[in-house]
Image (cartoon, rainbow, N blue to C red; front, side):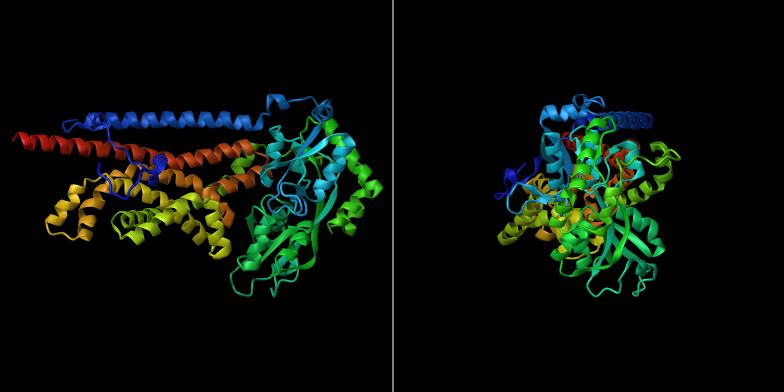
Length: 566
């Protein structure tokens, strides 16, 4: 294979962009093969694929089981959890610093440190037990699974008490009474939550209200908003406030502590109306860790009685009259007796239509963005190989920039800085990101075409553009079909990143349903099966295309030998 003088090995991403250098002739169908032979090969291929699919499902079941079965070293009886913590000399608690103020956020005065009212609270509680507090960072909606895995001893991050969570974990008495605060853009006609009951003046049909995924605000907006309100889920409070300031959504509903803490960071928003609803922040531990829960519960009671709890909250500006209720709560909150919660499989049957709707979003994102990525990647590859030197340098920088920065960061730029709509930002972000990888694939395919073919086309009187369009590019496109198909499969999974621009695709919907129903295993298996139903047919197509290309190559070789002998 001849390469252009300015091509280098480092320019090609071997893991994603190199087409097969040589296809095995043994895979090519013989020109004399019968229809029965072709049918047998097709049947064998389908059977092999079905076996592979079954094997993948079994592997996923095993992986999912490990997610819900605690590690062996984390298993302890209910009576020795407190002793275990004391023996280790540390109390590990989980939280999320992403938009985490005033709960837990990076310490401004000490890089690498953590500040927040919950951090101060845990210092006091750990001191009561006689151990050191250790903060463990995790994604907010994954903290309870992190607790179940045994990697943290407790979860303290503005987690609201709910009956479902109390059935699966042990909860302390409340350490804070929260309320929900409506935040709007300055000058908005919305002045209180009740205003959302009326139709938007622009005639759009519904108000868009940003909420934190899986939070009490998420539930409240869905249940109390009515037909005029569409909740838009974000991974952080600050992302929702920025979207309000940009005018991308109408309002956001946040817990009062976060609303007060961050309102000053966004001059384009304001807090309106009285706080809505109310509920309790509690510390969650595993159900078998009753002695640890009781120790934490006693510590909260002592801090409340001594006035230390109030002093902490006043320091962060989050003390409210509602906190007086803390003194009236005698002990840990227990689940409310009543009808047992639906099992995971029952919940899966009920919410399967929502998973299917989210799968359609995933398919739409992938199908819309991949052709754009392929077309843009082809033009970039041609420009790098056959364009002038300045264009080569510019396009090389384009490829390296996109391959060297995370897709999530690129989506943030498109959505929050350029203020594109969610669908436009999602499709454009995926297309632009993948165009860099497709460009390297096409460049490798173009380099696989012998230079003599271009020379022959020019000798026959074709222009360079005509030779590329009629001779070089068609051959290169045929060569790169398998690796491009593999990238298309990968793109289906990468659509999950689009949740940062508020698109509820399959992975995001799984997270929401798993948190709200407790059926993490069942919904994980359902999501995995849906992803495989999307990707396995593409895998079949990739293998078929490889065999087809090998067959064409073998047939061409046979014809060439026959002509030479004649």
